[in-house]
Length: 437
Image (cartoon, rainbow, N blue to C red):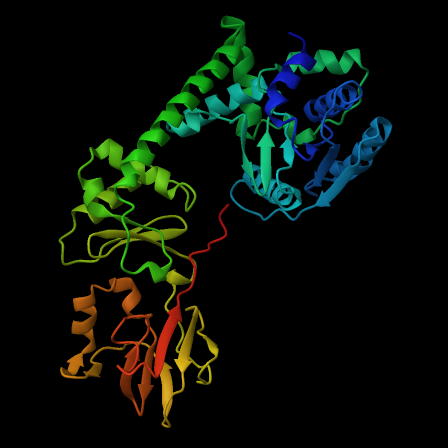
C-alpha cells in the first residue's frame, strides 16, 4: 500500500472533522505530511487544511524557521498560524519545550478539530526503547498513541505505520525542502543518542527492529487498554455516594479497594490518579500501603507530585491546589445576601437577614462551643466527630460568630443556622485545580 493510501486509511475515521491542522516544525517529517495532505486535498474531499508552527526561540537558527514554513505553506496554498511560546527552564529542556508546544496547540484547537503530528514508526521504536530504559510500566511502554484527546479537539499521528526511510524517499521524489534542527544531532540528548548510536547498531543485527518494536508497542497498548477496563470495573464499587458531596472533591471508598489484590489496587489507583498527578515510582507506592494499613483512628496522608491522597473515615480524598495551604483568616466585611470571598478558601454566603449584633466569620481554633436547642452548649469538636466531617476540612469550615460566640457552622444541616430558618450559612469550598491537563 502506498504512503498516501496508508495515511488516508489512518485518517478515515476523522474525515468529518471541522478542520485538520498540521503541526509544522519545518523538518522532514512534518513537511512530508503537509505536502502529502495538500496533494490529497486536490483529489479527495478532506476537511479544511491549515498548519501551525510553534516558535520556541531556543536557538538562533530557529529564528529563520517561521519564514521557511510560511514559504512552504504559501506554495501549497495552506494557511499558516505562527505561535511564539516561552519555554520554562527546568531539568529537561526537551520536556519543557514539549509542554509549551502542546499548551499552545491545545489553546488553538477548536471543538472537534484535529491536530496532525508527524511522528513515524522509527519515532515509536525510539520512544519504546527510551521508556524501557527508564523502567516504565505497561502504559508507558505502549509508547505514542495513534490518537488522543487534546483540548477541545484531538491529536492524531497518521504516520506511525510509516518509516523514516519512506518519508525521506517521498521528500526526494517531490523535491521538498526542509530545515534541519542542529539539536537533533546532539547526542547529549537521550533520544538523539538512541537514534544515532543505538538503533543503527541494533538494525545491523535485526533489520526489522523498528517495525518489530512498533508491533510490541501495539501489543502493550492493547494490554494497557485491558488494564484500564479492569480499573474501571474495580473503581465502580469504590465510587459510592458521599455525604459531603458539597466538598466537590474526588473521593473513593476504601473498603472495596482493600478487597482487591495488591496489583489490582495499584492498577485502579493509577487509573484514578492519572489525570490528577504524575504517577509515583515503584518505591513511592510504599506510601499507599502505609495509608491503607494505618490505624482506623488516624488520618494518614500519601503525598504525591502535585497533591496528596488523604484518608478520612475509610474514604480516600484527592487534595491539590489551595487545599494544600492553610487558609488566611477571613477579612471580608460581613454582609448578608452577598457572596463573601474567603482568601484561599472559596466563598461563603449568608442566606437571610442576620439580627443586630457584632457578627464575623472565623475558622476553628479548638475549644469552640455551639449552643444547640434542647442540647445546650456542645463541644464543636465532638459535633464534627458525630457528623464524621473529614479531618482535612474541619479547619476550613467557616464559622459564624456573634460577640465571639459560635452561632453556625457552614453546610452542616442543623448547625448552619437557627431552627426557624431565618438565615443560613453556606460555603463553596476551593477547587483542586492544579493546572494539569
